[in-house]
Length: 45
View 1 (cartoon, rainbow, N blue to C red):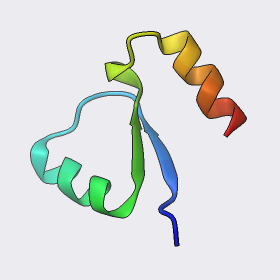
View 2 (cartoon, rainbow, N blue to C red; view 1 turned 180 degrees about the vertical axis):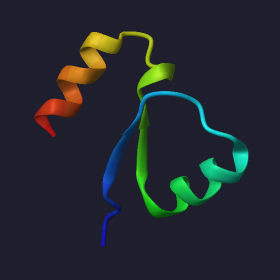
View 3 (cartoon, rainbow, N blue to C red; view 1 turned 60 degrees about the vertical axis):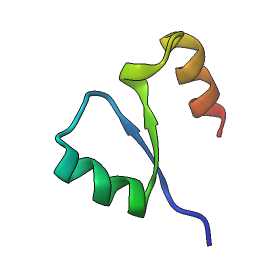
View 4 (cartoon, rainbow, N blue to C red; view 1 turned 90 degrees about the vertical axis):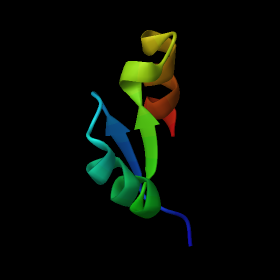
């Protein structure tokens, strides 16, 4: 079964990142080189 997808808009402390990455497919908006294109891609998913 695939993990649910979430959009992370800012960095989290390591102790929060680890469980998020285990439970979800995390899309890091703040790391995207082209935020507009990344938003469009995720909106279609």
